[in-house]
Length: 328
Image (cartoon, rainbow, N blue to C red; front, side, top):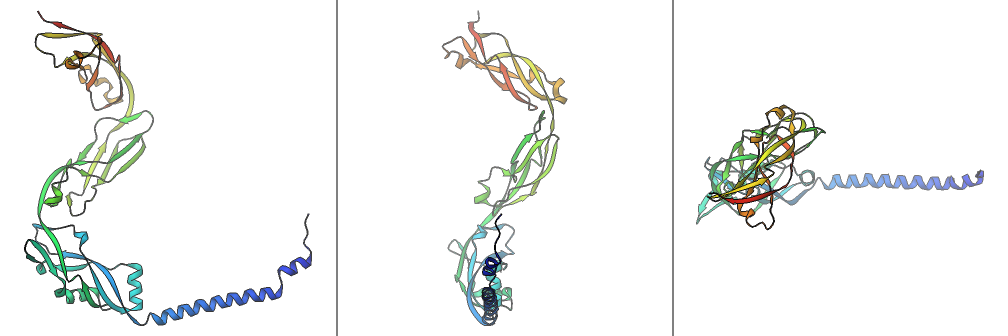
């Protein structure tokens, strides 16, 4: 076992070293106090700085809307005490500067705003803590567009995984299935769907009833802004259905014979729908135009119709023999 001698500890805890550490801490403490006092003194003086503000056009006519409103901003030169400038620079909680639409002017196909006429209005909004010196640019150009309305379908953004032995028992429902979008024609005309905010559901074993907000798009408004989504979820069981094979696009005077005449469709089906599942819910077909191009006598069958409350579908066999015969 390693034992340190008293002399070793005396070397580590030397009185002169302890006094040195105390001097360092005292120096740092008074240095910190000095910096704080220096800042307090400096912040009592007035300084000139620039701050960028967003512009908000208020009281526009109901049939007009600003195109790309987030791009409207101005840079103002202000004078204020150091305390106030530091607060604005650090926390940036200043509100947009509002301009009444009555001040908007129109010339040569362009809308513009003379900011030099708005200095008193801006000063009042900045408050008594800030003195407005200058606004840049002097003229603010922007676009106004006629407001248009369209009704578009809603498309939920859903990511769902189901618990073992559970599945979606039919199509989900969205209420309302369509919403009204309002905004500039240049943007509204490009929107085909109203997408919801993403919803992720994992290991689901029961039906889902949720309200989803529509994904916002700058410059547009949705009415309503949210939709009701209902997703039916049930336990499933396996079902096997014999479905006859048919042929499409057969020209007049011809017939196509298949062997076997039926294929077996195996699928998962919601328990509540099991006894309602019938062969006429399915369509298994071949295309005549593909058959005549086929070099072998085997045709690939395709499932072209099936109910929305089944899943994990398999067909057996995938290929059947065929013969094309001419009617007498």
